[in-house]
Length: 595
Image 1: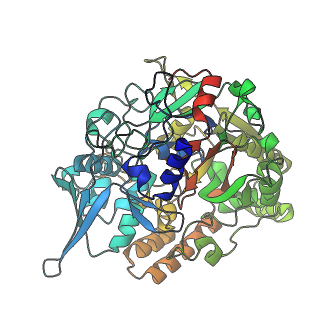
Image 2: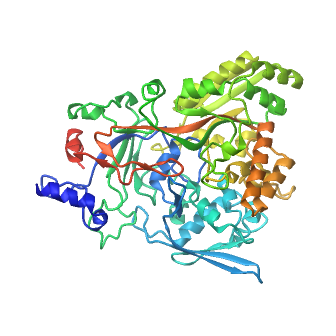
């Protein structure tokens, strides 16, 4: 009876969870247990947990969101939320044309107990903006003074207009008066989270194993093994005050999230008992293809800011003519792929998906822009375009990430369609490779393909990726196709040509497109800016350096009789901080966990 009353009080008193109540149960020794261990399936395997690296798989971004916290977030209703930010101050001097923002950080710590400081924010941004670092997120920082000149190798990184004048204060100088609120919303991008120089600078492989990585989010990486275990555990320092906070589960309830990639996902079956506990999966964020029809009506399905897209390598002579690229696009049936192959997806009608805003969270960029590409196949028109281009055959290699069954299924379908057009097409699974120097880690070979250099040496013809929108505004998705906004920096070895700027990795370069993006970037009127972005997307779909196929959806299934408390943000990434497991200690014992 006393236990029941205590639980009721915890539920009714809004502040009780934070003031004194805990979800932790007691062990046989009378000590507080660490918390629930929840077997989950967290998507396609990852080998590099660096948040600044390319986002090429829609499942991976969900894992990274568990490990890192940004300065801001956007909640499910589109409202800006401060996470690491305590307060901001705008300082303007119209006479001197000086425009600044002072960002004061809340006090939180890295997973090893070291304070997160302003220097960590500045370092992470400088890393992205360096001329030698390829990152499409760079355009999100271009409002900062000298950012573009630094990226193009014109100015030194020391000229970058973001500094840390105090331990917990970031000072940002801007080129001109900007939309400060949009800048703060851009800081919700998963690519712009703080990083610690003393950790990242030690090794290129710092983010590939638990012994060398430090994280800022609710969970930290405790173990990762190829085709084996991925184990995330609650960070002991996530916003916690070790001296005053009594319970470890104040901000994060589950102790451990665990995925065993050696087991079949078919183990997710509601109704199994503790007697078969080792076969349980209580949550899956990527339902297997062969099970999706069964979960079509019961899974939690939401649109993501992600488009499954094929990149054409324009360094390949076969793809030089835009008519060939459009023909290859016209030949595929996007409705068939979305509805019959992937199930949890929508046929792509443009490059930018539905969740991206149209100048306001109340309107969708996609809905406002309409359908720019066909969702049904038009083989006759495809053949006509190929005939006009004088192309009847050719060799095409579609490279996709090994282990990603959605990408594999789509590639096999597209391969057969293009073969019917006369092309010799193969679908190549790009496998990870064991690191030569450290056999305990694997290198993501597919991620390494996503560079200007690999495109230029023709390592791939077509690259299959889940393009992740790096902010809720269309600019971040469309700008990288413009040469000055690609984020790929400059060729600092080419002195003779005055360090030429790298364009988009596909090799796409259009003066007309560059002009539209420049105009959109300079436009301060949000309505006019979004018009320019719609014009840019139309041109991009006409030139077709990239071929959108489907808009990805997040479809997750849970055993709601045992676990509850899931929530999502505007990016439709699941938040696990408040997830509870009913009778977790009994499950823990049944599953054989001793800690």
